[in-house]
Length: 270
Image (cartoon, rainbow, N blue to C red; front, side, top):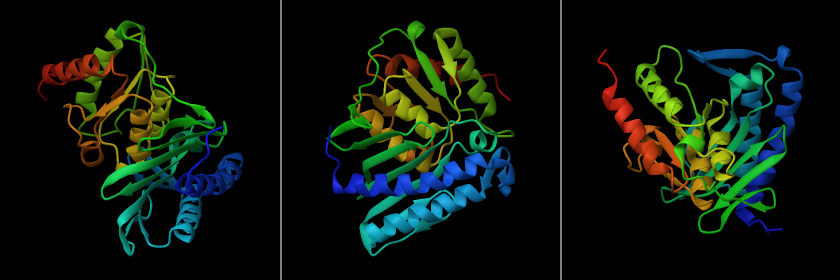
């Protein structure tokens, strides 16, 4: 069994403590207070409580680090080199509908580069973790992306833009192209877990538009450390800024990139 570093121990302990509240909230989801942030975008008291727990635990362990989180925004720390990037509940819509597929995502950024990442699925007690140069793990098992070489044998995960999003028409063009070329497309509802599933070889690839840093920071490192490739949809490395993400194994990344590029180029003008 791999020995976790002090950094990953801090992250794991924070995730486990926050998860206890999420599981309680999931069992009483009908009683939760819910606010609407935007079309198809919700925040519940469970999100807010989990974020408070994560912030308290991470700050207690590393008091000088900054923190960027979905609900609380950015907080600077006295240590300008380090920043936590946190999503206390990725998959809120699933959570609020009683669908047991959501996660906690924590990443550590050093000098602008993500060096540690953790995605925890409380309902399955699955903890995906990675540190730069040290590999990716699911609990105590080393992870490796899938070895599939053919798109027509591949299952690709995706996320659908929110209602009224300007990206929707472009997204539908890419969806049609990927559906026609692969064995299947899955929309599971948690980008952090989608990326973790690519790292674990459960999905052969993943793409989505317009994500936020807390959605992808940990997952991108997981895929890299599991031997996969990540980029934006143009082949660059602007994922954290643009929110556009493509992740896959080394055999399928380029064919998927070409497929998505051609689909976007062929999209009828609005």
